[in-house]
Amino acid sequence: QVQLVESGGGLVQPGGSLRLSCTASGIIFSVSNMAWYRQAPGKERELVAAITRGGSTNYADSVKGRFAISRDNTKNTVYLQMNSLKPEDTAVYYCKLLPVYWGQGTQVTVSS
Image (cartoon, rainbow, N blue to C red; front, side, top):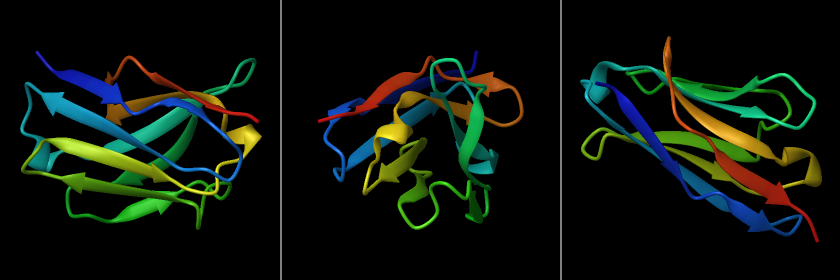
């Protein structure tokens, strides 16, 4: 059974940083493509960043230069480093093991 467990969300002031983690189990993580999505209140869920099993990455335009996705195959974990956070980054962030498995989500709130 595939499980994805996210952590690292919380409340941060504008301009601050957070690092999200997502640890996978029940699957061979090293051959999996991973992604982070987010969903703000009243909005559709959107792709934030993705990383292939080979380490190639892509980002939403809104987070380029501020967020970085990475992975540690020895820990079955994917990370999302979020810097220079803005109030519009406030959302529930979801980890996804492509194409079908989702984590439970972690809340990120950017507010002063």
